[in-house]
Amino acid sequence: MTIFSTREIPEAGIRLLQDKGIKVVQWHEKRELTQQELIDNSKKVQGIILSGRIKADAEFLQECSHLKVISLFSAGFDNIDVAEATKLGIPIGHTPDVLSKATADTAFLLLLATSRKAFYHHRRIVNGDWDFFEPNANLGIDIHGKTLGIFGLGNIGFEMAKLCKNAYGMNIIYHNRSTNERAEKELGAQKVSFEELLSQSDVLSVHANLSAGVQGIFNADAFSAMKPTAIFINTARGQMHNEQDLKHALEKGIIWGAGLDVTNPEPMDKDNPLLYMPNVAVLPHIGSYVYETRDAMALLAAQNCIAGLKGEKLPKCVNPEVYNRG
Ligand code: DGY
Image (cartoon, rainbow, N blue to C red; front, side, top):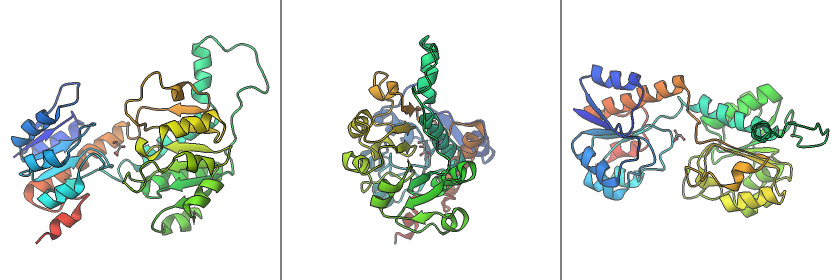
């Protein structure tokens, strides 16, 4: 049995696969594969580990319907046509939970960086502009005791809420389809409507999975309904917010600041004005960029492959309905 990986992944995952007698072929080039290269490499193997920006669309899945497993090296699964994979009987694995803390840490980092204009002040030093002390210039916002609104309170949102509650005594509200009883019990979180989330949040942090229903939901209307002192944080997917509307809202003072670990498109153009605004902090999608998390992701991706190759249920499966097909 052989697995093709579209990226070099941490040794922990490779070793686990090899210990089970599975051969691993990794894509070593520092460029994205073309769709045809993905198809050609996938045709030679029984399973793949998919990472990077490449999409497993319907055409790819139909060409490679022999695959026993597609193991995503990510929690998000917006780069794959899940419905088509399910129709073709291909189980899709992913790596949720193990990256929740690291991703929440990134949201928290962006919250602090934005509220204190940290990236802007760093640029002042780099630009030789650390000169005259002005008591009123370029101040930040104190977030102690303020209200954190979470859009999509799953595991990552929970970790972000916990950090904000413990560090700053923040009041937690959230908007979800389902009630998060643990967050309500442990953090005193309160479920609210989308409109209430917009109007009451001092900090609004996005943690939902990307789906057609929420794509672009943070648009001009949403920003207008927020407080002029509000900070918008997105560590989920760049497609959740409309970038032009966000820029406009920041320029016009409709909202106060933004911290983004995700952009649309990625990578963000180096001349994008958002990178140079004082109240904005942008990172290049580094949510899970820590050794410990990456090792855990590699192990989970490998475990998903091992189960898939054996025809067993994946430990973390995006489309468990694949097992109910007649
Ligand atoms: C994830 O795991 O979904 C991260 O955002 C990386 O894509």
